[in-house]
Length: 274
Image (cartoon, rainbow, N blue to C red; front, side, top):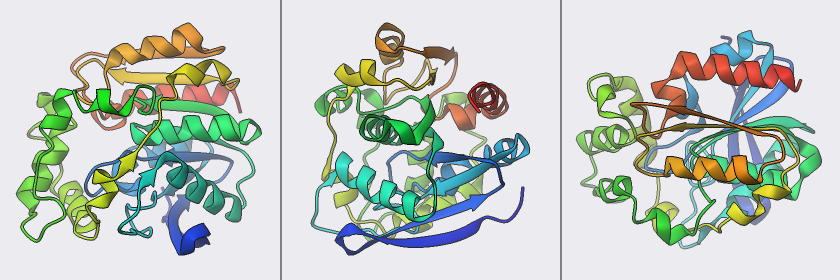
């Protein structure tokens, strides 16, 4: 894998969106999820090389409020805000068409982009996508209850960051979380306002899945405590060209917990539609 080239773009609202990239070929845009410390590179570091080796140009944006992008306070973090700022930056970067790979909130963003701009999206690879149920229903999931911390205050520390990462994973992963990952996310988390989580507002895109015309590959851990794996059936019921793959003893981060399998399955899928 080559060096990640870094780019920044000014978008509407006076915000800046950071993205990194490497590789060449058709563009694959990786969209990370929410949570303290999230960023494009930290969520997908174990996947980048496999996609580059498969002949793809990997784009790793940091969503607004995350990574090295702007982190405004005193605003609502709506799905439209995430989508509009991201799409503006991608178009400024010269991306005219791309495969979108999205986890959790990133999956919801990918779906909304495909609904808004169907000609932009070659295909969707979605790992436990969010935004396909009412927002309040996600708050009833056990994973959310475990995410309590002092995030947003000076007391927030590395131990809390490690626990937050561990909550995303199946317990089999408890002793395998890299220190570098925890540290990387902690450095981002210390720069984030509480509003990025406390004032997030997402719609229910579930009823609109049938409007998606692009090929869709959904991957889900059966032990996901944040986005219920049962939601995967929605894509099979309503999707025009959808497939679903589930994994036992796997939590919310399929791309991390099942790294080699995810890389092989996802690049194989993309090869069908490139």
